[in-house]
Length: 122
Image (cartoon, rainbow, N blue to C red; front, side, top):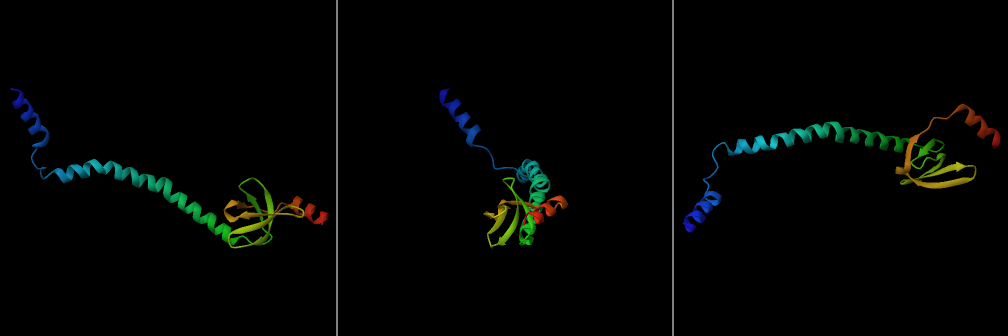
């Protein structure tokens, strides 16, 4: 009796017949929700992020000497020199710091009151 139970269990676990012709369809049906989730994730998250990175890179490439910028640390400054991988930015009169290009968050428009203050100080 003991050997018949073991052999029955072994046959049940290992002695299964080859998958039926619907096996491939079953696998596709099982993977289809994951594929749909990935496609939705791609269009809602990955694609907009790539567009934003491309736009930021174009903005960094377009920056030139004299542009006013905001850094990721919250400092405002004016670009004094442009190098391939970094900017030299004047954050205060006669205070120039070197920043990696990626540390610049955005270009800031010149404010009218501030431009007249800087000119009167010089």
